Amino acid sequence: MALPKNPKVDLKLKYRKMFEISMILALLLLILAFKYFPKVEGEQMAVEAAQELVDVEDVEITKQETAPPPPPKPPIPIEAPSDDELEDIEIEDTEIDLEEEVAAPPPPVEEEEEVAIEFFVAVEEMPQPIGGIEAIQKKIIYPEIAKRAGVQGRVFVKAFVDESGAVKKAEVIKGIGAGCDEAAIAAVMKTRFNPGKQRGKPVRVQVSIPILFKLN
Image 1: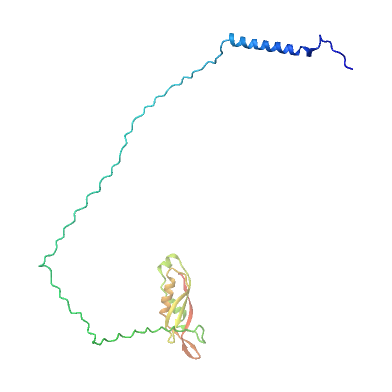
Image 2: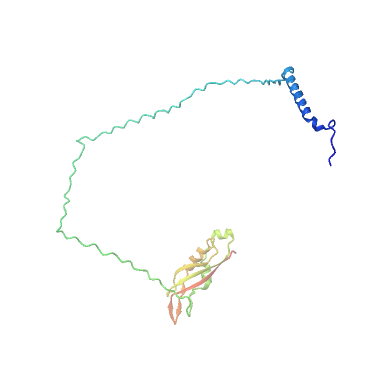
């Protein structure tokens, strides 16, 4: 069972009266504030800065003019030959006689094909230089370039000897340079050989010959 409240100490009964009184006081304070207090305005601060003056000059617009082309050179007058200087040209008769017999062109000359001469590589009796290898060495002319450079060694030459013992061709198999190869070939070409033989008959044979180049 709830206890009865004393109306003198019950705060809820005074809420409405206190609210109305507080509202009236607030309105009075607001009216007094607008009426008696002056306006508060913020001061404006002016910032002064140095002003720069810029001189603007008027620029004249220039127009680029192209120079006219040079006048053409006058033509060089050429004297025309007079009628007296012109010679009369006689035109020969160019008529073709269709009944004239024309000789046939000569037949083309047939070139004879060179037949390669075969040389044996090995036979029963190989060619030998007359006088031996010493005879070839005596024909050697030592090149001056090789002497100054101190070039020494052996040059191997392949000689193609025919049935009569004459050297038809010679080529270097292995050389040492400095003019020695050419000197060896020249010496072999000057040498006569005893021809090679196969079954007792002289035949064409290719033979390899070593030639020594040595400084004394």
